[in-house]
Every structure is written in C-alpha cells, then in structure tokens.
Amino acid sequence: MTDAEWQTALRMQIAEDEKFTIKKTGDGVVFTNYNVYSQHSKNSYKVALRSADNTLNFCSCSDYKTNLLGTCNTLRQFYYTSI
Ligand SMILES: [Zn+2]
Image (cartoon, rainbow, N blue to C red; front, side):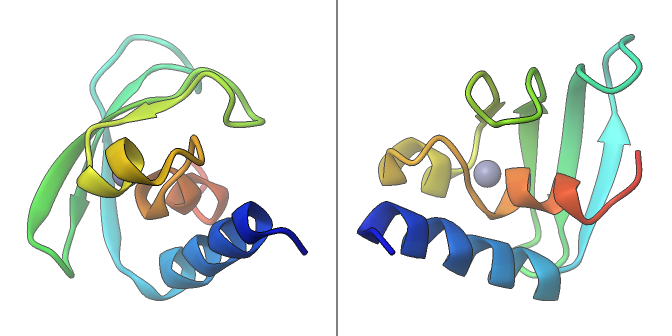
C-alpha cells in the first residue's frame, strides 16, 4: 500500500465514524453541488461532486486543500450516504 492509498483508507475510516448532514444545493441529480455540515467539527463545507472516481470533485475543507490526494473525509462521506 502506498502512502497515498493509506492516507485515503484512513479518511474512509474517519468518514464512516463521523456524522455529516448533506444538503443538495445544485440542480443536478447526483453530480451537483452540496453543502455538507460536520457535526464533529461544527463546520459547513461546499462540495462540488463531479465524478464517481473523485478526479473532478472539490471540497472547501482545509484537509482537501492541503493533502493533495484529491479527496477528504467530506468527499468520502458520499460513499456512505445515498443521495
Ligand atoms: Zn472536505
């Protein structure tokens, strides 16, 4: 397992444990904009969901900006939530 794979797996584990509230703010069916509220950090993040493989997605959280993985706990949450 590479470092990037390990970091991604770690974020999936955290996303499973953390409680998020996801609200759709765009017009699309699935690949659209969302506002995601983390009950853990008490912060809201803007998410642009654009691809199932995470290559075109965006999140406004600090983890996404700094980890260079193209994913974060917030984006991983979408794997555990039916929208
Ligand atoms: Zn995020």
